[in-house]
Image 1 (spheres, rainbow, N blue to C red):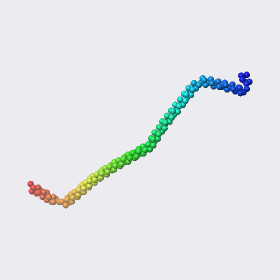
Image 2 (image 1 turned 180 degrees about the vertical axis):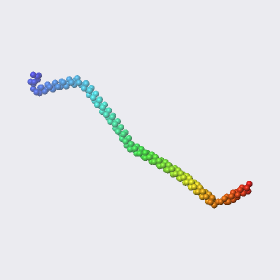
Image 3 (image 1 turned 45 degrees about the horizontal axis):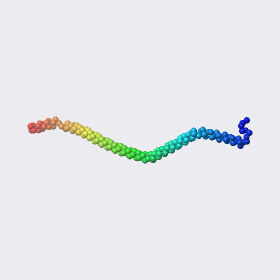
Image 4 (image 1 turned 60 degrees about the horizontal axis):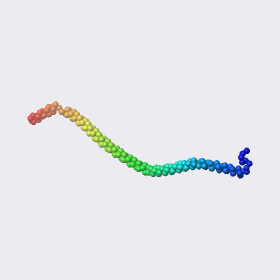
Length: 166
């Protein structure tokens, strides 16, 4: 049988409380220093983590502000780039159109010169053809109308002229 089983309930509770108090006292006596060191270390660790979290939060907020500023400026940069690209495209368009107009002008001038040359050649061919046919017709007419006595008479006149010159 156990010790203190015959005692009244309040006395049993008192003994249990005293035992518990002695146990807590012994534990506090022996664990006070390690527990205090552990709690201080834990406190310092938590404090460092909180400070680091605050520092990281401030850095993140700074980075957020910087990115927000960049983003707000990005619209302006995009618009400036768009404007400069449009200006460059307009300049390139004008240059291409000017080049095309110059090329069209040169092609037109070359075509005009080629036309004039072709017309001159055609006119020369027509004139040569007309002259050749005229000469052939005149020769035929002269042969038809010219006789032997006319020929002899012209040769004689020619000879007289040559003699009178010399």
